[in-house]
Image 1 (cartoon, rainbow, N blue to C red):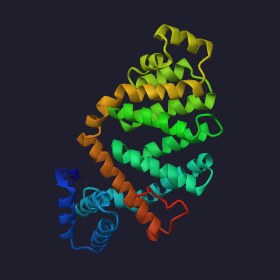
Image 2: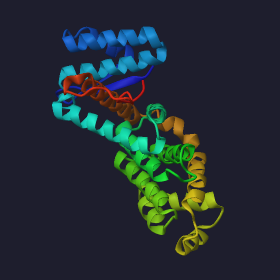
Image 3: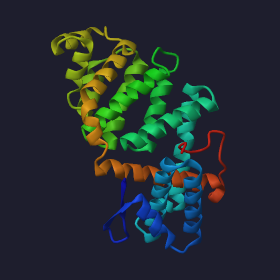
Image 4: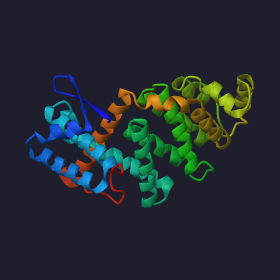
Length: 287
């Protein structure tokens, strides 16, 4: 059973299972938490075990807020920021997806993979959206962007990269797509600094030596449309065996809990607590 690490007001951590989080929630007698518990029960009845696990984490988020450890996350400013961030992700994805249904499909993919990998949905969804927008109209659009994003994200998780490093790596990918060609600056510099060994992996993906790859970069003959799918496949091949252990680490579970907090913030904002209504995209991660 999955565990959840909560931070209390005094900075100490409390480790709860989803079941324990729900049980603890039932003892907190506030209107907000009562509503959350009812919603969690409805989720369990309607969606089964998978939804129950998510409901337990929602309960954990709300319990933590009641204890004061995440009080700042429920301020008006935090709710507004979450809503604005989600609006920005929706709008950027719309350019690439072309329709509300397309946006929903991409959000469902990002939500599922963020949960599986234990990575920050907010930052990585924004990076994905920018990459998808850059790839619009190219051979990489659609599934190509998903595969590239997954390759980088999975490698980042295995290598223990920070959220900032992961976003930086995806920014380098975005720039390659925008320029159409791969440069040494982006591959050796921006990407290599954030994903150790990226240059060597890139050479293996192209079936050349690092010296040969360097010359190819200098001549500007490596097209992003040709290179990035091969590079992503090589990343997944080389890091795939270590992924299972990496996604089970406590740091990954903390990111999942953060994602639940972000969901709750967006839900509260979308419910009209700060004067916003839900938009055609559903305004949040599909759950």
